[in-house]
Length: 212
Image 1 (cartoon, one colour):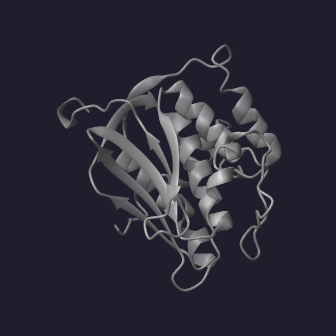
Image 2: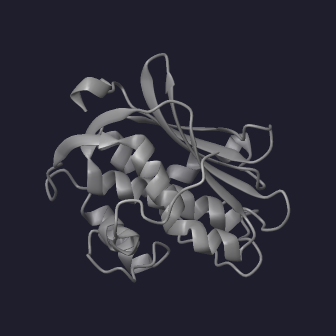
């Protein structure tokens, strides 16, 4: 797990507003109105993707920096686990939204304290880029994993960590909508240690470092 310098991307405070598509650095990802706005902008008829080369490893490090103070306050070890660098052709702002929602969910439902971990992982699986967020929280039972992509769905046993708020039930619906537009697949797996949850976005193809 990498230690991340606070100088990454120069202006980390702007990342939150970019993720919302609002330009407002005070945007809260768990705000229902904001998430409904995100969903409305994912309609292909309303928003054309602005494709460019995106370094997933830089995206991961930026997300860790953005949420580092919150993670520290909640006593969660948040890190960027870059196993292999990876580049994709994607809409950068949309991937910000996707990753923002994944990290937000992981922090919300992982109880803070000694041993609590959330990792943003970048890797390659048979040559396909992976962007994952893993935690060692309570996880999601296998029978519920397909339903969590439904809008407003929250499991019966859903409970935020101490001091946190239960989400709107839109986060993973937003993640899937963005992945679908990029022809990527969202997979829910057990956490790396067999505990918790790992959500992976697997892209169909990556870009070579030379062209990135």
